[in-house]
Image 1: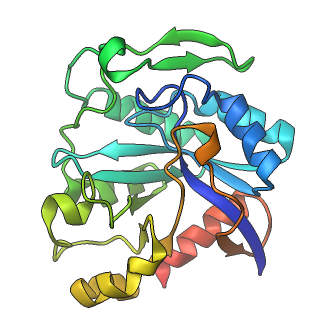
Image 2: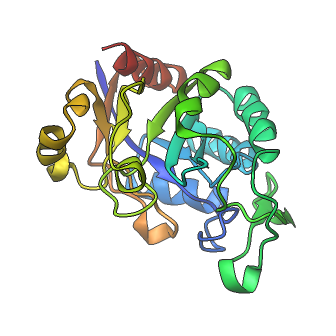
Length: 241
C-alpha cells in the first residue's frame, strides 16, 4: 500500500469565513509547497469552486477530491467527498435549494468569492453559505450515497458545530464509518464515551480558512495507487471495514 499525505478539509474564498487569498490556485500552490500529496476542497454548503480547484491540482500533479462541508438542520458539520466533479456539482445543485434563504452580509460574515480557472474572481454567491440547510443529520449518509459520495462527520472533538457538541451523542441508526478529529489524541477518551467510534477510521485535517493553516504532510491514507481514484477507493474501503 502507498502512503498518501493529505489535508481533506480546506475552505476557499467562497466560504465567508475563508480568507480572500484562499483561492483554489493559492491553496494548491501551498499544498505543493508543503509537499502534500492529496487535498480536498470542502467549502460550506457548496462545491462551486471545485472546478478551478481540480484544474489547478492537475497542473501541479496533486491529487484533489471535490467536496463540501454540509451544515445539517441541527447545525452539525459533515464533510462530503465525491468521486468526481460531476457528482459533486449535482450534489451542489441539490443542496443549494436546501440552504436557508438568508442574504450574505460581506461586511459582517465575509466575502463569498467565486473563482474561474484563471484563479481570478468571477462573481459572488449571495445567499449566506454558513447557514443551516433543511437536511437532517439522519438523511446525510444515504443522500450522499445517491451521489456516489462518502460522508464524514467533521471535527467531532470541536465544542461547536460537531455531531457530539450539537446532538451530544452518536445516533443509534448511524451508518458512517469514517470520522474526523481535530486532535487525534482525543480519540481514546471519545471511544470510551462513544463506543461506536471503535468501528470508525479517523481522519485528521486542518479545517484551514487561511493559507498558513494548511497541514504539513503528517497524516496519511494508505491506498493501492497514488491517484484520486486510488484515494477514493481507500476511503470506500475504510467504510467497509
